Length: 306
Image (tube, rainbow, N blue to C red; front, top):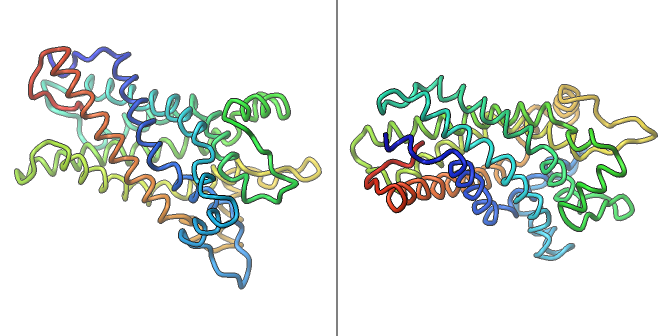
């Protein structure tokens, strides 16, 4: 009874708040990951490393540039993460029978469903985020210079039309389904296995270990779809002709021109963003759920519901 007692609006609120809190810590790594993904490989030139990108940004644009796009990152979490975690925790409880959680493949299916729904809602903020974080890598005369996420959304709508706000929606939704199937299912499964050993009790350390395992699995699985999404959402048109025709075209061109492993370009900042973001999001979410059960519902010793 207690496990299903947190009202749905509160679940959605906790999901979005947890994602927004985590984003405040990892936004610089998101910017570095985007810059690396939109950089085109030049034959004979050294490939940019995480360190070289960070040092180049600080040297040429200033340290505060690392937080460019934070408003878009927060709006993305407010829309995407609120929806996906709210739906996932609700589905997770509905598919648990007498306190027994659903199996791994059911968890993956629930994650895909929640992720797809969240991604559709969050795509406009995602487009704004990609453009704001990649803007500094463009020549000065081609920069869009959005002042905030709301300025970005208004200008995109006015200058390029409503549908541009959902540009790259297909790979965004595909990436979200992959990310959530991998992230949410592997987190729940890793946590279940860790607790099953009897060596680690349910608490912040357990959530940390499960999150880092989940983050690694998710990074490996989702990066190729992520690079397709990033290139599509940041591309410009030349004489009315788009740089890429679609996600498949991005992947084939990247493999052909930059090599197969370029699909995992930006792996380090991606993992060190996704890992801590996963850790912080799940820790914030689980602790919020436990605190609500204890202080509002009067249920001591309740689980975080994941």
